[in-house]
Each structure stands twice: as structure tokens, then as C-alpha cells.
Image (cartoon, rainbow, N blue to C red; front, side, top):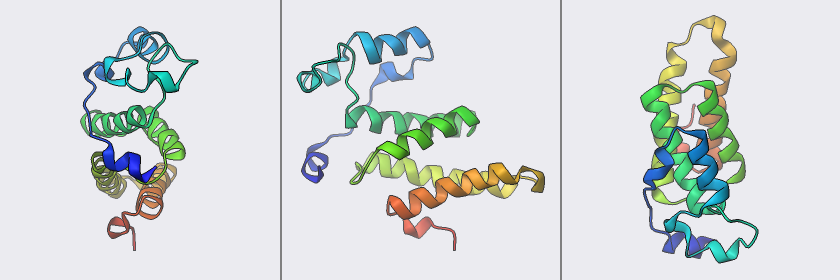
Length: 143
């Protein structure tokens, strides 16, 4: 896996910016994006874009960008948490950078929460812990 990451070039997939459910359905289940044609043969059961590392990495980057633009709302937190649960090391540098931005955003948002929003503060702390410990960004860890 590490050798694959070394060869992996970060990419921007513009169609992933689509807010339309139908377009997501087409991208994921019906029509393989051109950027993934080279690996489509490895996923024989898929007619859409395969669930490859590149796709997961790109989704993390976009979700972090959206969380900063739109706020780290519950749906975005759930998506990011779900993706963090399935990706593994090593990560491409763009994903590491996005996760570091997320830690900083979580820390900032957590510091602004009132005492009655403790469960939300705990969620932000969970992100900080997962990213700093599991994904090796210990310099950003809570001390």
C-alpha cells in the first residue's frame, strides 16, 4: 500500500462538487468517471466509479473544505467520521493537510461552545484524538 501511495498523484474531481443526489448516484453507481477508468477493471462488479483510495481521499478533502465553508454540521461530521473509520495509513499529503485543517477547525469550534453543548464538544475532541493519534499528527494533539 505504501508503494501505491508514493505513486499516487493528488487529483481534483470537479464533478464531486455536485449537490444533486441523482448526479452522485450516477457517479458512484452508474457511470465511471474518466479519472478512474484506469482502475475500473479491478472492480468488476461496478459500472460506476469504484470505491478506490483516490475516491475516498478526494471525498475527505471535499468534506473538510465544505465543513470550513458551510460549518462543521452533523451530516458532514458523520461523513468524515465514516471515512476516517475505513481509510488506512499511509495517506497522501493533500489528505493529511485537510485533516490538519479539520483538527484546527474542531479546536476553534470547541472553544466557542457553551457548557450545555458538551456532547458536541466531545465529538470535536474525538476528531482531534483520531486524527492526531491514529493519523500521526501528534503535534496538534490536546495536551
